[in-house]
Image (cartoon, rainbow over all chains, first blue to last red; front, side, top):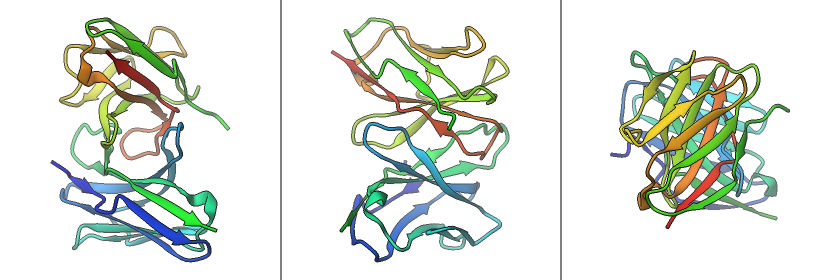
Amino acid sequence: DQQVKQNSPSLSVQEGRISILNCDYTNSMFDYFLWYKKYPAEGPTFLISISSIKDKNEDGRFTVFLNKSAKHLSLHIVPSQPGDSAVYFCAASPNYGGSQGNLIFGKGTKLSVKP
Amino acid sequence: EPEVTQTPSHQVTQMGQEVILRCVPISNHLYFYWYRQILGQKVEFLVSFYNNEISEKSEIFDDQFSVERPDGSNFTLKIRSTKLEDSAMYFCASSDQAGANVLTFGAGSRLTVL
């Protein structure tokens, strides 16, 4: 039961170009979405988030877009840099009573940015 | 920058043995979590802990699992009788607020059950 889906296991992008990572979700009770980045031998690191009341959030080179009607969000990285090469996880937080940090993760997309 | 530290980084154990994974959350955080990632699969929520009690747990977190905050700094995950399918990377995380607040993860403890 994949409530959060990242259908692309990998993505390769040239340095300086835009990276677009996609995520779909099925549960309309999700009200907060996060992107985490993970390097090998490290834990996931928070990157950017968005509340369901917004459709866009921007932080430097990173922008997250949310399309609630399509239950879809995307992470844009522009310009992409070799240091951005990592696995990117989309995560959702459910908005039902008692939820305490139960993030539901996608399987991740491995981004490779080539110099 | 404050970080969540986990020990051991890798533990190999025999099936049926008890394992304790340790975590030191960020000092001013109040909410603590354990997640796991089986190789090739997604990161899965196990349990959240606040005010010295479990606040939420997943179906994975059955009677074989327990968590404890034995002192003011450590947060442990115990697996009473390990099974082969418990082999995974276990991540501890902490946050200073409940709900959708950003979680800070540790580097993980890899558990291999033989």
